[in-house]
Structure formats: structure tokens, C-alpha cells
Length: 481
Image 1 (cartoon, helix red, strand yellow):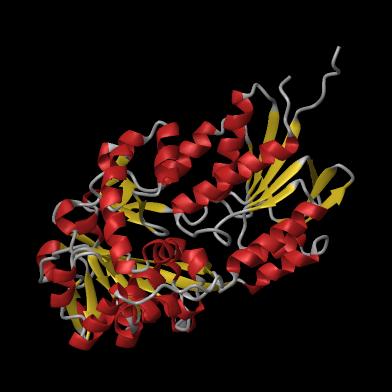
Image 2 (image 1 turned 180 degrees about the vertical axis):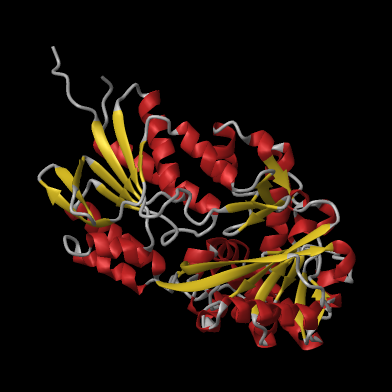
């Protein structure tokens, strides 16, 4: 008769969306196999969900962290389905499809047909006032330029400049694409941030022609999405993004949650791992998933696995956002779209502004307006030396000059997201591969995952959490009772 053994124990360090997703998929896979597994999630902060934070105030639904996610990225839609929350999904207001870019102090509509900043309809692109005739003709050269044959990684900025020219890069692509990472396109790895661009160039030679073909295929693929996701670029939830955090916590009913629990280091002791808390207490585990920022991972594992210190090469940018609520009748203008982006060359304090209540109809009571202004990017973190009052004054100054808004806000809310945006340098994927291999050799029961590795968006973090759970299940070879 087989001897009864205690269930294996996995500790997840970090209770953000990646850590919670890892726990969910670990629990799911072990339950499906009839196995028994103990899971503990340790979070240094006072709450779970990481940067996802929804505030309800005076009838407004306010996102203090991320405000939505890409509908076409399936991991978050799939998790939503598995949690039974599909009826909570909501798409963008169809009347808010226009987006603007600030150029020369004026708002210009982004040409229809752009996909990730790449034109797929040449007519609207050639008519836009965002670019000079020379800039448009240079972009059209993409149709005849040869593809790059070097296998080496390159920066996103150099790639886009090579294919479309410096004007398209600076006026359209940079504020749109670099805004996702708050980064400098010339410092971001193409392969790590937008690998699809590299793949399109290799397959179709022309980026524009390849994106045109992908657009047609994307329309066919959207049929697999839920109805609410088919005709919208972004999705959220009717009660805010915290919906998915609450759904995960409810589903993890037999998981042990430990908050206000900082971890100092992780050590290997024969076949188990010792997770040593900052208060000196020790938790033993058969496996550990670390879902922290790069610098946090380096601190925990840099001694037993010196190669992990290479993660310190991943820089982080600090950003902030300011929410402003208004009475619609006092605003003085109609909001015709979802907001605007601000290229670096405009020299503005804000980097973008979302007209939140126009884009998401569930976010404001009737007759009220909600806006969200973004601050900070690589090379421009001056806001950190300013008081909150100074920051809000600077934001309102830009709104006055760009949109003519002089109305007094009903209220403002500011959120600082310190060291929140990882910058993937050229060669990032090789760096990650090397670090993970060294860790697997020396501490095979420890996995590292999260936004520092393969994508910063919510669906990317969920995908990485799911992949970590699958790998951990395989490494533990959890057997059924």
C-alpha cells in the first residue's frame, strides 16, 4: 500500500495579476488530475491585484492603474470565461473611435486604417495633416524596400525608421507604441515588444502590405471572440477591472493568502526551498513561483544564482496619472473621440489624455465627464520633483492650451506608479533566456515570471502566469492521491 504523503506545497511570491493567475491555473490543473497541492500566495502590500485598482466615487468608476485590455489578446478573455464573468465584459463606446494626435499645438485626427501605427488604408494616410508630403512619400517607400536579412535583434525605433521614415516614427508610431511602455523606441527591443513586426517583414517584405493582409485575417479570427469583443479594440468590465481580481480571489477558495509579507530571500535546502520572510520566519516549499519586478527577483535570488543579477539591466520608468471629473455643461466643448496622444517633440507635460467617460460609458453619471491624463516617460520623469498641486496645475495648463478647458474640476485623483514600466532593451529575449537557464540548472524548483519578461499588458501577464503554472506542474510531477 502506498504511504500517505503530505501534499506538495507551492509558494507564489507576488500577489499581482501574474501571481494570482499562476495560482488559479495551478489549482485548476491539479484538480483536473485529481492531485493534491497546497498553494500559498505571499504579497508584500496590503491588497492583492497589483496595479489593478478601481475606485468608486460619486457615481464614477475610476481606474487608478491600467484602464482596459486589448480584446484580441485571448488569455484575459479566456480567464474571464473560466471565472464565469463574461457577462461583466464591456466594450468601448462605438461613437468614440476617433483618436487624435497633438501636432504643432493642434489636435489632428489619427488617420483611419492605422493598425499599431502602421497604415493599412493609403487614402486616409496620404490625406492626413500629421505628416509632410515628404514624410508620406518616405513611408510609401516601405512598399518597395527590401527586407532586412540580419538575424540580430534591433530597436523598435530603428526598425520603424528603416521601414517608414523618421517622420512617421516621431509623429504617429512613437506616441502610440512607445506609450505602451512609456519608453524610448530607440532603446526598446523589437523582438521583445512587437515581434509581429519582425515576422511580417520576414514573410511579406513590406510592413504596410503585411499589415493589410493581417487586417483581413484578423477580421476572420475575431469570430472566435465573445460577441462583446468582436467590434472593439479594448475591453473592460462594467464594475471596473477589479472585477477579475475579485473573481480570481473567490475562485482560489482553498489557497492561503498572506499579505503584508515581504520576502527577503529564497534558498535551496536539498529537495526543498526555504522562503525566508523579512521578519525572519521561514516557509518551506517544493516549488516557488516569483512574480515580482526584475529588481525584486534579483534581490531574492541573486546570491544563490548570481546570473539572476543580470535582470538589474532591465530599467524601469516611473509614471503617474491624473483623473479629472467635470460637469459636462461647464466643459465648454464636445468630446468627439477617445482622447489624444502627445509626441515627445511637442514638449508637453502630459503624454496622453483619455476622454474616459466618452470611451467607456459606464465610468461617469449622466451629465458628468471623466478624463485621465498620463504623465512621465523615459527621459522625462520631472514630475517626481513636483508636489501633487504642482502636477495638477501643469496638467490643467496643458488641457487649457490644447483643448481650451478652463472649468474647475469637481475633483481630481492622482496615482503614482513608481518603477512600474519595464524597458525591454535590445537583446532582452537572450538575456531572459540565459537567466532562466541558469536558474533552472541551480534551483529547478523556482520559476520567475511577470511583466519584466514577455509583455506588460494584463493579458500578457495572465498568459505568463498560466505558462508558469503549467511548467511548475510538470516540474513537480504532482501525482494524484
